[in-house]
Length: 331
Image (cartoon, rainbow, N blue to C red; front, side, top):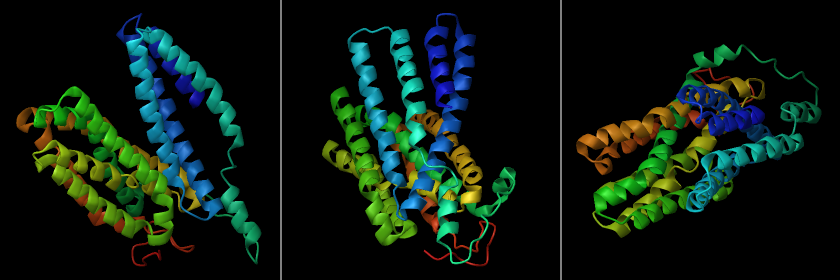
């Protein structure tokens, strides 16, 4: 999928000289490659997490955040140096197509965690056979985790796209201050993802995410209603820090049962990425009516919903499946 993504990115870089249809086709395959790659790397992250026996997924997502910053900075440098977009994107595509296929050779097999469980058991057992991938769409727990992830994807996407503009339009800040506010948000989110594993191991998924979601709601209130730029910065930091673990922990929760990890992660990712697709434009549309700053109240409403369904993140017991409704898993 990384090779498909690289070829598609090169297609975008070259195709825009040929017309819109070429770009649309290349973007379509770019989406397929990137989306499938995203599911695969989250399944790999969950496998490594099980092998280590401790929470680690959020650190992989911290790498994702660092990559976002690096890509933005690289783009800024390319624009400043007046490097043609074709050269920029083709160079990135070549680096991607070489580095990732080499890097994934060091990944562990998808069944490694199952094999470790079997080898360490007193009585050897056969790993559960995976059920139909479509059956994951009928599991209430999986769907609710997907909605949980959607809420955090919506909060993250809104922050990425609109914090700077909200500071400029809502607080009268300069473009530089607006960019700095976005940097504070992103830095806080990356820090939360890096230090999160230790907190997850100590306090558990549900309790920690409830506390962090509460902090994010406080941050949003400060950002929207603070009236002063310093308060908005504090709000942006709490907002970013508070949402840092929602997405990665949701992926870990979906992969609790190795045999169905790929199917459930794909369902959760499909639901969650709807927020990245529709969320920022929705904020922009509402912002035209009531200002971008006030439109961010929508983010608080969605996070409040996530707070209410966070209990579904509890790890499954060895005998429980997501379709079980009567028995609550132990954290």
